[in-house]
Amino acid sequence: MEHPATTSRPSGPPPTAPWTLPGIGLLKGLAVTATNMIQSYYRKDRMTTVQYPEERATISPNFRNFPFLVYDGSDAMAGLRCTACSICENECPPQCIYIVLDRDENGKSLKRPKVFDIDVSVCMNCGICAEVCPFDSIYMDGEYELSTSDRFGGLLFNKQRLARSTDYHAQLRPLQAAEVAARRKADEDKKLAAQAAKEAKAKADKEAKEKAAKEQAAPE
Image (spheres, rainbow, N blue to C red):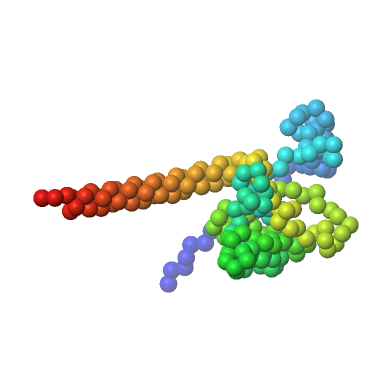
C-alpha cells in the first residue's frame, strides 16, 4: 500500500521578522495625524471646519429631512399640486400625515387639500411619501434648523408651512426639478395636442354635417 507523499518541513526555528524600533508604528500614525492637522490650516481642501452659524455647509442634493409641498405659480394655496388623493397618508409608516379633502357646498371634490398636516415629531424622514406621490407634489426638504420650544404646535406643520415654490425645489435639487419640469411639460403638451385634435375633429364633423344638410336642402 502506497502512502501519500508528505510535504517536508524545514527544520529549525521559524524565521523572525527584522528588528524595528519599538513604537515606530505609533510614531508614523502620529506623523500622519500631525500632517493632516497642519494642512487643515492652509489647504482649502483640508479646511473642513465650518464657522457655524455664520457660515453654512453646502447641503448635498441627496440629503433629506422632512417633506414639503410644491406649488406652481405665485399663489401657494391655489397652485398646490397636491390633489388630496391620500396615497402618501395611507403609505406613511409612522402615520404622521393627516389630509382632509376640500369640497364645495354641494359636496363635490375640489381635488385639493382643505387640511394637510405633518407631525414632524413623528416623521422618520423615510421619503416614502415622495416616492409614491403620482402628482410630483411632495418632496423631501433640506431644512434642518427646526428646533423649537413648542413641542406640539411648533412641530405640527400645516399646508401653509409646508408649501414651497418650484424655484425652491430647483434650488434644492436642480437635476430632479429639471427632470420633473420636463416630464410635466411633455405631459401638458400631449394633453394640449390631444385637446386640439379633438376640437379639430369636432369642427370637421360639424362642417361635414352642415354641408350634408345644405346638400339635402338644395333643390334638384
